[in-house]
Image 1 (spheres, rainbow, N blue to C red):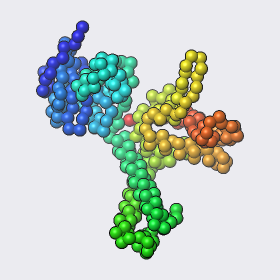
Image 2 (image 1 turned 90 degrees about the horizontal axis):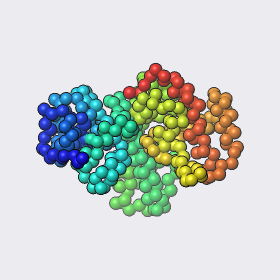
Image 3 (image 1 turned 180 degrees about the horizontal axis):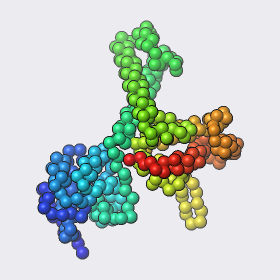
Image 4 (image 1 turned 45 degrees about the vertical axis):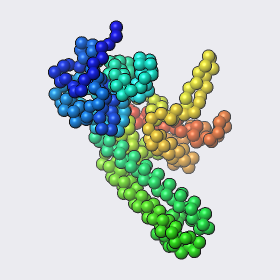
Length: 359
């Protein structure tokens, strides 16, 4: 039986809805509302202010949306007004549009797909962040941006200087006398000197901002019980604990420690055909920043084991044994050990937070 589709301009707050799919954009949303009578009311363009105004007086229902920058803030508001919110992955929406709307991707079709997918009880959804998680996530993201800006500026500066016969050593890039070297280098045209000095100033400004935000994160981690708990795992410091605090959500949803590396994409992809199973590259799923920090943390654990500074004797013995084995692929032993090196430690971590959840 075909579903009747009705076009409207505003949300009728007198009706009750089973589910509401909203396709988020910068200034407005496309909305599909499933009524209890089986009709689909579609609104092509609806301002955020109108959506919020209507949501405050609507009978509690289910809102479904895709993950995006506005998602966390909107979910917090809708849940405060008594609604249930589901964040559905874009791949699921894409597949639904492909199968039900002949691949005709429009904002309204996406909104309808979200509304119907909200009724699927077996669908895996994404947990939205609360205010505390958003704070930690935003600060760690800003830190990564400052690191990126500083590195790009210094690398570009060194390349330009080398082209004009001025080789900048590795340890001098952040020092004040770098400006003097540029200003006193005779080969530089006057028009170029000013721009190069500005690049040095930009790099130093980014470095100061980086140091400031790092201190802020360290202070937050010092006063947060969950961050302190995470830091009891060797290799995980304040920055990594803050990012984990922001991204993991409820730690109890991981049934065993091996599910945790899979969450941030540091496990090999399984390729099965017939009776032959092969392991491919790591999946790269989840948060890129978190994966990078966990790689550094695992590398730190391996270095501690190599130097005899790791307290866990069993893990140290296992790492040293694995390092002696020849690996059938490139990249050295380190990357082969990364996911496994945390399993035992994460098992302790999961049991330690048996009564604590990251909300």
